[in-house]
Image (cartoon, rainbow, N blue to C red; front, side, top):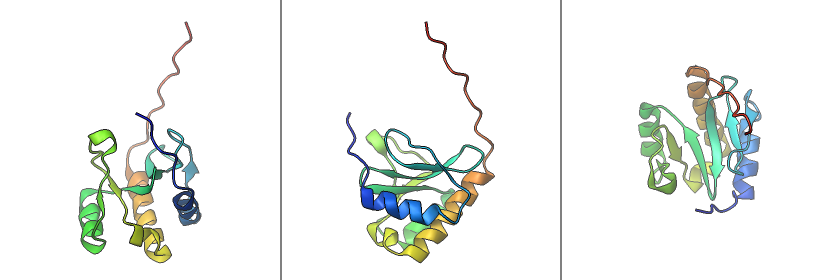
Length: 122
């Protein structure tokens, strides 16, 4: 399944929003993705959507305050800690930065991702 290229506008918004954070940019599947130092992803742009990683209670709060926020379901499979942000939230810089900070804090609180050994070429 071919994905569309990420929205350049959302990519720029996300890049600006994560500037105050100690985030690491590491593209995934051609999409900009930001990680905490422990290797856990907290924000990305996927096609025409910005996504954040949040605990369940914060997801409920986000959905209540910003109707239209939805679970992130690439290829029809729900990624339980990720939500798609509404366009209105993405266009509100102050609110976006606050949610990015919460997402970053959540990802930073998770255990460090273990690096998998590289596969040797045959």
